Length: 102
Image 1: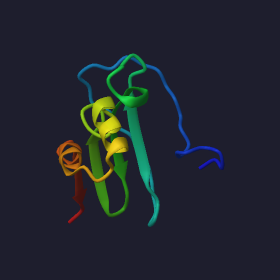
Image 2 (image 1 turned 135 degrees about the vertical axis):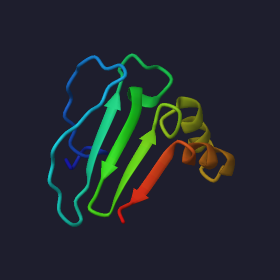
Image 3 (image 1 turned 90 degrees about the vertical axis):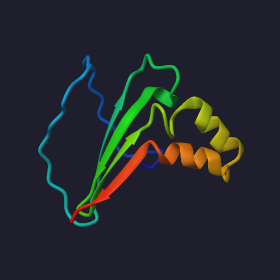
């Protein structure tokens, strides 16, 4: 993480996606986390074009639909205005799934 950045290192690669599968090999250790984000710069209904994210640790995998959840401009603005709004939290929670490994 860079000192002046508000997020981890970002690598950008432009390529067209539609209905697809993405696979990759990686190795992480205890305490490490790998996050893969997909965004569409032309998407104007989500902050910075965020579409979805996947986070992987040695304990769990988490998948989030950011386009309809946490980065959706309407929900994001509502959350900023009222961080304790339970209805907004519930809408966002429905777009996220965290699964622990057995």
